Image (cartoon, rainbow, N blue to C red; front, side):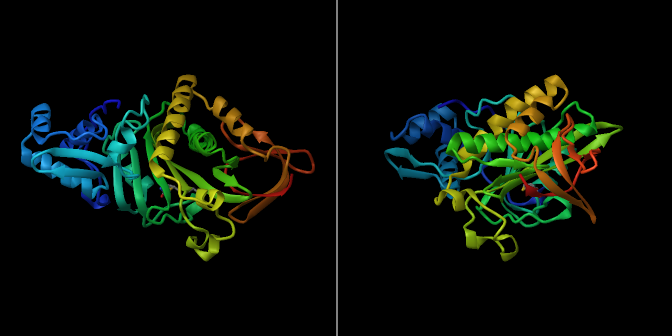
Length: 349
Ligand code: BTN
């Protein structure tokens, strides 16, 4: 097992929600038990190697059990780790992740209003770059254009990443592409599901929406001060678990693959995919590579679409996406418009 670097200390206001999986002692005990797979580790050995009292070890074991770990315990013999949970916890997310920036730390809520809201708050409180905020459930999940995002308990990945890129505000769409391209590649690599991308932020399969990305930011003059890239991915929602209003247009990995999918390995893979692309984005200073990858994942180029944005409707052929991620729409008269936002319906491919 790879050692877990210490989680940076950081104050998270309690009003944001109940957090899970924190505590250095529990981390240390989990690492020590994992280092001896299947074996019984004596309480005495744990106390000696970790410099902790028996009571502290016992409390940590109780915490780990409450988080879903299966730990056998016998007073005289010791402890044995028999199973780890598929639970979003700072420890399970970060352990041996091997990323540069993404996953520098994590705050994992049972329930919070919106991980983007929490992320924006933590960013203001100087959370380090790459900090991840997850929630098992969001009570006020936000979608694009002021919509809500259905985020039931355990139904998917609802998470946000705090970034501090040295980019102008016009780089925000590149961050949205970063989330969407990385999520699509993670799903394709782990499960071979050929998900596609739809401008500006949708992750789709078979014409249904599987996920979306919402980037929010704070700026100083024209520069991004911090950005929060929020990803919502329907993973284990059953078809009838979706509200009636989106039942026919939404999909989940479960509805596609007909089985439940573990959340932790999927989130970890997305973070790894994001980390590499993010490093490239900041070193190049532009999103050209992300836009090129996005184009590879979209069936939209050359198709005839309708774009609606707050009552304005346009139709045309998708000519491409520019380096800032704006949609280039060629009208029947041949004029190419540059669109920054809107809802797209594909009329003809
Ligand atoms: C969309 O397609 O409209 C974007 C959906 C983004 C949803 C995610 S879930 C995690 C993060 N927190 C939020 O409140 N929204 C984003």
